[in-house]
Image (cartoon, rainbow, N blue to C red):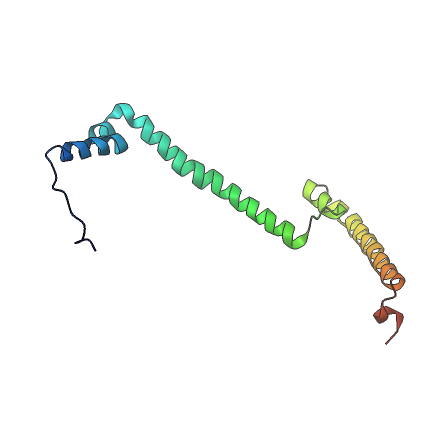
Length: 128
């Protein structure tokens, strides 16, 4: 397929033109090695390495983890979780938290049993 195309021979102006275009795009080697422009390399390295690896990456990972936790476990926010998260659940309050957990669990169990018997669920009402 490449043999079908006609190739034009290079002219003497093509090489300097290509070099100028590459210099515009990538900069010259003299500029790269010039210590006056070292701040450019430092800035790009700081932005490229520090910003993405140490800031954006962990924040994105944390956001993904929180999103998956929210999807899998729901919103959360029961009183014991809030107390533990805020640091109020100390060793002296653990017994009170346990009692509160049992009270909340009993309330949820009673509410669930009330719903199932009120809805006429066959498994709980003894029907066939």
